[in-house]
Length: 269
Image 1 (cartoon, rainbow, N blue to C red):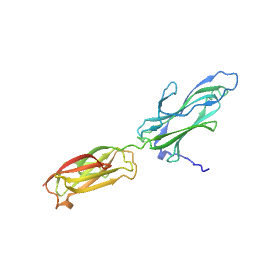
Image 2: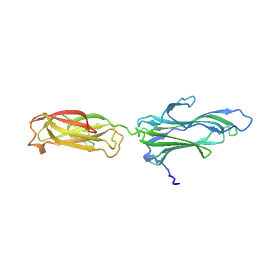
Image 3: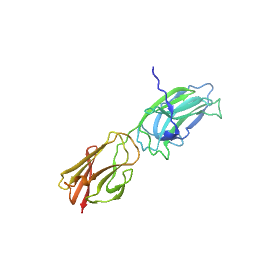
């Protein structure tokens, strides 16, 4: 059987970080060794601070989620026994968190029950969770006891802002916004998106006031970038001197071939 080797995620590529695992335990009063049992791993948005009980159990999360918890109930663990949570990004084949500890080092010979919680959360630098499939494994004394999976869904992109400009910067953001242009200028249309997600497209149709087509441009997104970004298009008026004249014009902006909005601009002498 082929096995997959997971490498630990280095800090340079870390999009999420972790807090230390939280465990609440109660000492068991018993005359002998109790039965060792474990519940299922529960993936959730949050936990109750006093009990570690999961809040809002989910198997799918948004990239903008604040944190993700994994909890497990146990009973009959010895204080000197060890527990371990391992979090994996299955798409990247990365271990993103590996937490290990004793159930109760201060009472190594006693037996306990409780709920252990482990969580991942975003760093200040990483504003979202990396989309993909994740897995959480729970080990007792290095023996795998339970596993659970969840998904961080790829977001649906949306347009934040559309503006016409006579000048843009290297990122495609408008420097000089305007709706009036001379016939020898270049008209820029700047489309600001919340994310760039592959498989989506932005299209613009440059038209006269009578709806006749001047030019058409389309950009297919082929990579993912989960920060607000600009896609820009331009109409070089000098190339269309024979077809354009002073007057009212418009540009239609399409997201995935669906009309999103129409912007208007004027050509002046």
